[in-house]
Amino acid sequence: MSSNSYQAGRHFLQIPGPTNVPDRILRAMDHPTIDHRGPAFAEIGKTCLDGMKTVFKTDSAVIIYPASGTGAWEAALVNLINAGERVLMVETGHFATLWKTMADRLGIETEFLETDWRRGVDPQAIEDRLRADSEGQIRAVCVVHNETSTGSTSRIGEVRAAIDAAGHGALLMVDTISSLASIDYQHDEWGVDVTVSGSQKGLMLPPGLSFNAISERAISESKSNGQQRSYWDWQEQLAANKGGAFPYTPATNLLYGLAEAIDMLHEEGLDNVFSRHDRHAEATRRAVQAWGLEVLCQEPRDYSSSLTAVMLPEGHDADAFRAKVLANFDMSLGNGLSRLAGRVFRIGHLGDFNDLMLTGTLSGVEMGLRVADIPHQSGGVQAAIQFLSESATAA
Ligand SMILES: *Cc1c(COP(=O)(O)O)cnc(C)c1O
Image 1: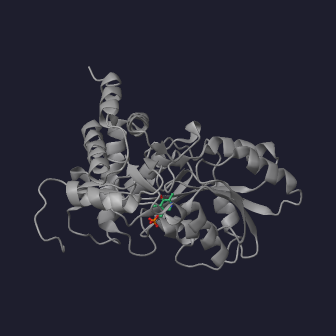
Image 2: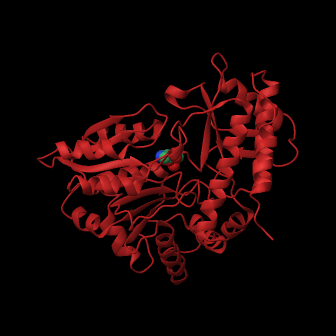
Image 3: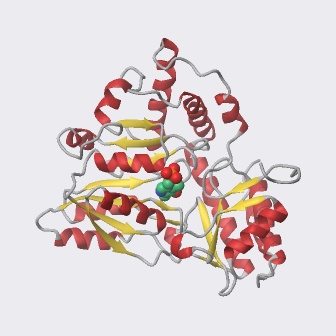
């Protein structure tokens, strides 16, 4: 650490991932690493694999990689899509663009439906494009459920309905890295073929694990399709996973943490987890509105419950503002990515998070707006407090 003085109290990590890791998960990981080929390991392996099915809401299969989310993106593509085959993607923001760039590098033909980075996917645009693909050249539709660069969430059930309405056989692949365990997601119900996720956002773990939830169709087609692959190959994983094992060394201690995270999510109840996130997102937007600032997402149906991206008035630098918040109040806020650099800051309100952490976060933002001399009205924190107290439901 290069900081030259002790910072009292807890750092506020309010970027939209990695998120705050709860003490229960830290304690759960604080154990000796065991033999991943010994008898004790199979139980933890099984617990995690089965538990993640309940989080993805699938009866099919889940694969766990010792990798960041980007690795699970690659796994989804190389197990199903050959070089030269075509996929349809939607430019919802920076993360959708990175996934497209990866597909381009793998030699996949990509088609990118544009947006203005201020909303989620338009299911009608997908339906229209698929209807025009009478020769069935589009092998998969790939979308980001929660676009972390903009704070816009796409309606995946409607994307599935659009593919069906077009009578098209494309596979559906969805990135849920910043939505899983924060925003409702239903792999089976929505007919998703591959769901990609990661450990360090809604799942409340440190970075280092990522996931593919895969449909029966995806498993079956991957046997004869996809690119040359080794590390990411599903078949070897599925074979080893039957006995709770992995084909190469798993991230054992992160799996201890994952088992604890799954328990915590079910103790709270997934529906309660989702409504907690919805409520914190609403309180945050009320604060932004009271400050007289603008939420980046312009489509209310697509507002994200994981994070809120806030635009600063023209001529004010969001990174200079974030630096002041960090220096004065020891809070990290998310930066604007690529074309949004310097224009927006992002408030993460996902993971292990409660009302007082949110009001502390919003206080830090409001004080930061003053310190950085950014034109705004006061009263944002007050608006959030009013909403949170009016919507407090405990007896
Ligand atoms: C964080 C994030 C990623 C990147 O995941 P890494 O773990 O950094 O590889 C991809 N997509 C979305 C939507 C994300 O939020």
